[in-house]
Each structure stands twice: as C-alpha cells, then as structure tokens.
Amino acid sequence: MRDALVAAAFRLFLERGYEQTTVDDIVALAGVGRRSFFRYFPSKEDVVFPDHERCLADMTAFLAAGSEDDPVRRVCDAARLVLLMYAENPAFSVQRYRLTKSVPGLRAYELSVVWRYERALAGFLRDRFAGLPDGVLRADVIAAAVVAAHNNALRSWLRSDGKGDAEAAVDHALGHVRAAFGAGPVAAAGEGPGDVVVVVSRRGAPLWRVVQELETALGRG
Image 1 (cartoon, one colour):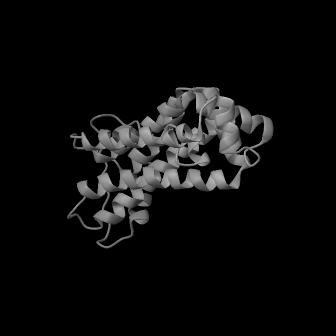
Image 2 (image 1 turned 135 degrees about the horizontal axis):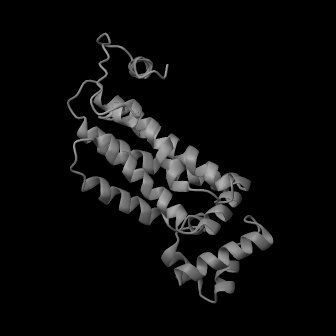
Image 3 (image 1 turned 90 degrees about the vertical axis):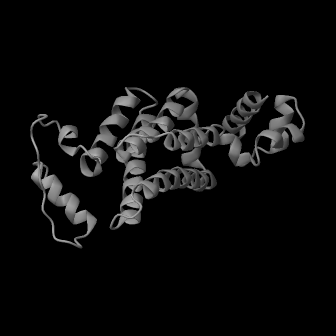
C-alpha cells in the first residue's frame, strides 16, 4: 500500500506537476481512501521522502550501538547509511532530486530533514566529547562538516543522473572530514604507519585555526 501510494504520487507529479496534484488525486489513482494515505504519510510532502524516517531511525540505532574509540569514524559511517538509502533505487532518487529542485516548498522540507540528520550526529558527538574543552562546539562543527561533505558527493551523483560510484565519491568526501577531525588523520592522508605529525597550537585558538595548522603540517596548506 505504501509503495503504491508513492508510485501513484510520483506518476501524477510528473504528469500534472507537484502543486497541481492533490492527496485526493493520489488516493484515487492508487485506488484507496484518504484514511489509508494519512496512515502512512502525514502530508503530501512526506510522500516525496518516504524513506527518511526509517533511515533516521537506522542512523540513531547505529550511533547508539557504537563502541569504537573513534567517534568521527562512527558519524562518517552513520552518514553513509543515507547514501545507501539513495543508492537502493537510483532512478527514484534522481527523479526526487529533480522534483525537489523545482518546488521551493520541497527544498525547505528537505532542509528540515537534513537538519534532523545533523542533529542526530551532533548529539552522538556531544555525548562523546562531554567534559572536553569546546566539546559542544567541536561536536557541532564536525557534524556540520560530515553532512556538508556527504551532501556534496551525493548531489554530484544525483546531478549525473545516478551514474558512477556513489559510495566511492562519498567515501572520498568523508575522508576529508576524518583527515581534519578524526583520531587518525595521518593514515587518512595516506602517510605511512610509522609517521607521526604533532601540531602545537596556543590555548584558546579557534578550531578553524587548529585545522588549518594541521593541514599545513600534513602538506595540504
């Protein structure tokens, strides 16, 4: 039933346009009643993003089960769950991307969904960095960086009509985040296992300055 409603909705969106399609139109094409629609989707906007609630729940559970010592790796791996959701059905994901670009209300809705992912990542990191100097700031900056890197690669893949290796592109983008903030930036940068880079920064230096000094030490400045 849920899949039938999504299929009917997108068929009508393509034929008539998003704004011109009503919930009544969708349920009529799907052959069900309005009550059935709202059992699955609180609004017409939600039928455009039918899989995000599940993905957010999976991400939250994945983060809660984390036990390794590298929290930055954990949030990067959590972000990959979103990419895998999109990659399950490239044709649908590309179709949704094009629709969202053309409807301002859907773009705003999508931003609210992205914000929820970012808050989940930041919440996990805040717990891991609790008690550390600037722990909350660091958590929020890293969460924002993970989302920005992930979305940059994801949207490039969607703009290419879902062609190419989306997982490799996202891994490459998230590698930059781990190089800047992770527990093992030297390994992420491709250095040998015996190399160590030590960066000395004054107390109270802004986080962006510390990252800049690290990139310079790694030969990226």
